[in-house]
Amino acid sequence: MHKLLNDSPGEKVMLLGNEAIARGAVEAGVAFATTYPGTPSSEISLNLFQMSQESDLYFEYSTNEKVALEVAAAAANSGLRTFCMMKHVGVNVAADPLMTLAYVGVTGGMVILSADDPAMFSSQNEQDNRYYAKFGGLPMLEPSSVAEAKEMIKYAFELSESLGQPVLLRTTTRINHSNAFVTFGEIQKPQTKGRFIKDPHRCVTVPVVSRGLHVKLLDKLEKATGMADVSPFNFVQGSGKFGVITNGVSFHYAEDAVKDLGIEDKARILRLGFTNPLPETLIKTFLKECDRVLVIEEGEPFMEEAVKAFGQEEGIVIPINGKFKGSKSKGEKTKNLFSRLSEYDPAMVREKIADYFGIEYAPVEKMDNTDIPEIAMRPPNLCSGCSHRATFYEVKQAAKDMDVIYPTDIGCYTLGFMPPLSMGDFVVCMGSSVSTSCGFSRATDQKVVSFIGDSTFFHSGITGLVNAVFNKHNFTLVILENDITAMTGHQPHPGVDMERFGLDTFGRVNIEKLVRALGVEHVSIVKPFKVKKSIETIKEALEFKGVSVIISQEPCILYAKSIKLKTPRPFVVTDKCTDHKECINGIACPSFYIEEGRVKIDADTCVGCALCAQICPENAIRPLKQ
Image (cartoon, rainbow, N blue to C red; front, side, top):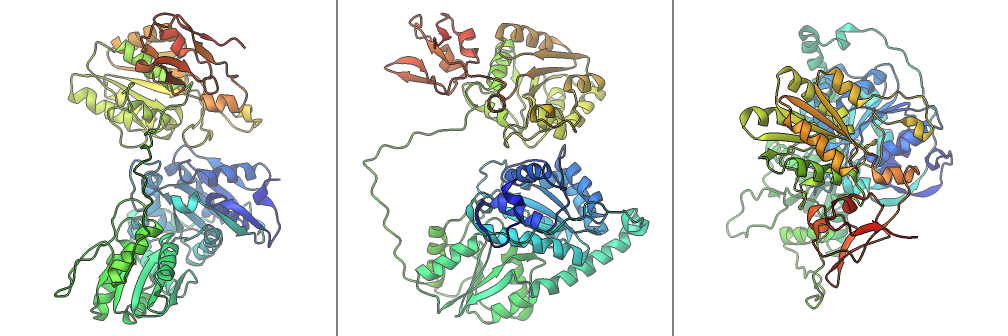
């Protein structure tokens, strides 16, 4: 049995934050869950997918976040407790239905999780999705710890049902990917079948209906404001005239800083976990008890702006700062305030609190490490044996005499922009490689060759290709079909053969047939580890006038090894090597290293793809004799 299905109330278990969230959803009686995977949210969906094989939970990996939210909206309006999860930029994709679903509401509890990524550990931006709650008029909760995340999701379902509204649960990477002990609660038996009650004056959002729904939305938001004021997730601790208002993981940093600075009797902390709508009365009361307030929040000044507005409404004239310096009293030094960039950490928060409140503080002296050599940079790289490296090399060889733009997309293959491959010139979001290729091909006389992964193609690349066919654009699209959603942890997509996992209840969409059905006239298949043949095929595609599609078919090597599709067979550099270093300079596989000026291959990481052997001018790379 999956460990998160153990019905053992009171048991304490060490869990990853995302595991705790999945357990909280199960304890809440979730019946229906949807997602498109994206770090830092991916482990939630993995655990729910695994549990769905052993329980009555319905779970699906949807083709993209918009689809996931729309599928979930139907279930939630059939009376089922429904959970939809995605990373922060996924909410951008789901924003269209989200804004109107806020009007329509739900009849069963619905929680939408946005996993934000301050510091951009695995994302193309660090947007602050608290603004989606404000934008949509939706309640939002933010946990400060792993254990609280589990409890908060249960509260979120109750809140959703009380208001008849979806509830946003915003996490950050530090919550999703931390480990902590969690106490199991009782598992509520889910209601797995519902019934949709027709209600066109709520569910059919033509203008005349939506005008009335907007009024109801604002009424619900007013009701939620009162609920936020008494929510157990909004509380004050400590006493004194120094005020700290904070949320998320910053709460624990602030709590520790107050103790470390010895100002427990001087500082009070207002922790906000129910952050939209903000608890107006609670905040105004807090401000009246303070001489000075510091707002500590990662990301944008979401709370700071509101707190200042509340203070102005009450005529409270005290310094309230966080990220904005604002005005200062005569003779007062400019304070060292927080940044809108990246994550915070305990030392930073302690330093800022000390500076803002004028507390004498000597930072811990850093260890002198001037005699220690600088750690070598380890930029992210494609794995040893990754077929994308072979495809990039082959396209580069086929197009070496051309002036080429290489739009790329979101996935492992984004790393192709790194030298020596240097195969990525433009990327903004999922699916953009196809659509931007349309623009580049019309706006310039340069050859355009774009790259997209199979999962990303299903997510949002298809519509761009339809556009290209209809408008008769001129570019080559390379679809990197590696049989899995690789970068986020090997989740399935509509092109995956699910029978490999022993699951026969899924269909499968054939990319080649789909592309041909869209009207693409030149479609070719390459096997990237057959280098010479692939280069010839790619050259033919590049010469075609119009839209051509190359499908590069080879399973992700890590995925293939995990399900025993591939058995590694290392290669070795023989004495024939005359030190051309074409292998290093051409493909830079991480299994290569230099020892005493000679190229070597690490047998422990080499998987035997033979790409290097095929491009070596001396034929000096051979399989290692075992």
